[in-house]
Length: 222
Image 1 (cartoon, rainbow, N blue to C red):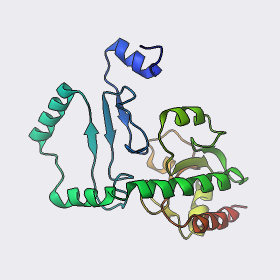
Image 2 (cartoon, rainbow, N blue to C red):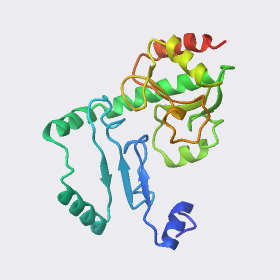
Image 3 (tube, rainbow, N blue to C red):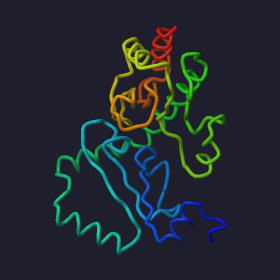
Image 4 (cartoon, rainbow, N blue to C red):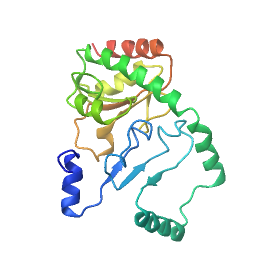
């Protein structure tokens, strides 16, 4: 069976290890880790799944009855369940998930094309670009693209100038929402990245407006 399974699945099975996949960015519409052999899938539903940056939620899923019983027992003992209003916000938001993901992916494709052509940008990553090292894997494993990209600018000052020159891109660490955001990851100290490394999360703004605004901001770096 390992001849046709992902390598991580075979390695985990051989070592008796549980595999948990953070599926926050992809969402269940973009990737199905349990179908690929993971024991657990987790997601910060604060981000793309609910998508409006107005609720703190998360979930853990499994198809294993024993694991489910253990997780449910822990939840029942700790009381970490969402309130009725939070549950309503999540339910309200998921009805537009498909539409939001489609626009975010459309925007990301256009933004990736713009960034790839900019001399101020290096290290562009978006797995659905044919030039990306993960293109083959993403095409084979994932169900649809999403709106999150990353790249590197010259330094911290360049990131600050980019954000200051933009009207539609906000500096924020969360992602997957309806508004486009830029996050300079090095400022938090937890990621081993260069000072100018940024994560861009495309929202659902008009594609032409978003690209035009970012074009102006990139021009400010010349």
